[in-house]
Length: 165
Image (tube, rainbow, N blue to C red; front, side, top):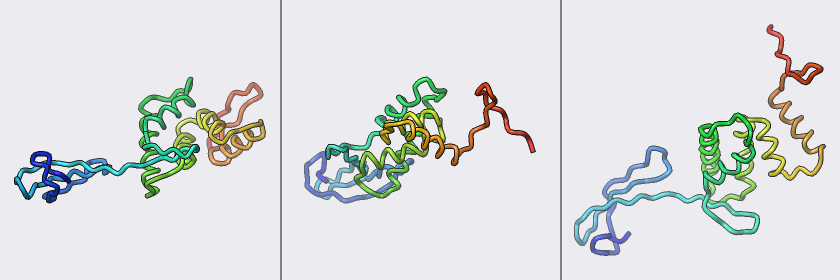
C-alpha cells in the first residue's frame, strides 16, 4: 500500500477492525518513511458469472429490482424487499466462493421469496426456471403445497379456515 502523503511504496498496519456488518476491514496504517498515519478499508468483492460468460460484481440492488417485478401488485413492502436482498446476499457470501453463477444467485432468491409471497415466488420461478407449459406450473404449485399447505377452498374458491382442534 503506497503512502498517500509521500508515495512511499510500503506501510505498516497499526490496527485492524472488522466493520459492524462484517463485510469490510478497516486498517490504520503508518508510513515508515514519513511517519504519517492513514486509514484503508478492504472489502471482498463477490463476482457473478452471467450466462454469456461476462463477470460483474454482485449487486443487492439488482436482486431487489428483479424480485420487485415479481412482487408487482402484491402486498410486499420495500422494507421486506430490502430484507430479502440482505438474506440473499448473506446466503451467497456464506457459500465461501468468490465467483458464482447467475443460476446460484437465482437459487438463493427462491427460498426467501417463497417465504415472503407465494404468488411472487411462482412469477419469479416461472421466468427463472423457464416454465413452458401448465404442467410445470402445476408441479411448482404441488411443490409449494407440500412445503406450505394452503387452506382448503369452498365451492366459490374462498379459503376456508381450518377447524380448531
